[in-house]
Image (tube, rainbow, N blue to C red; front, side, top):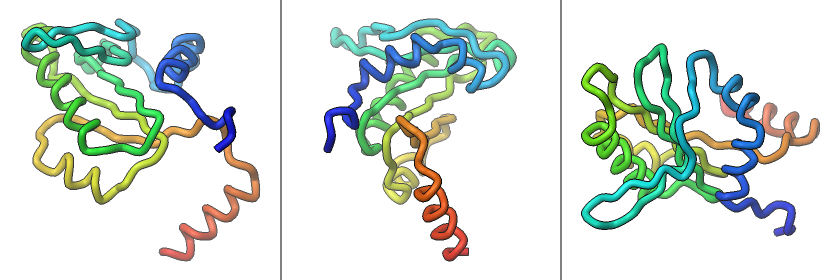
Length: 149
């Protein structure tokens, strides 16, 4: 792995903050930035949310957890914990339940399916890319996907 390919969570988070306007536009209409590295205490132990937004139209918090590796079931458990905390301790009575978004570099779709199967929480896992693929890589990917149809 090349040094430029290694992205640390704090670096990714800072890059999103540095480009907050573009990131909010990409998220869509209604998002308001609330916090980065939001510190909470659960049972005397400290935890940090990566990014917290409030969606003024949906009237709910959106909790974003960034991982610079493949999604693991413990990441989903971590996000579920944060959602439950926010629902009980932070959300106002007029708010809708918070939404969790786990952004990862890769995902095992079968693992994610099982990890969220029993959840009644709005929780999403999505793969992000650090740089755009080449034209050739896109062609290979599209052809592979078409072959599976």
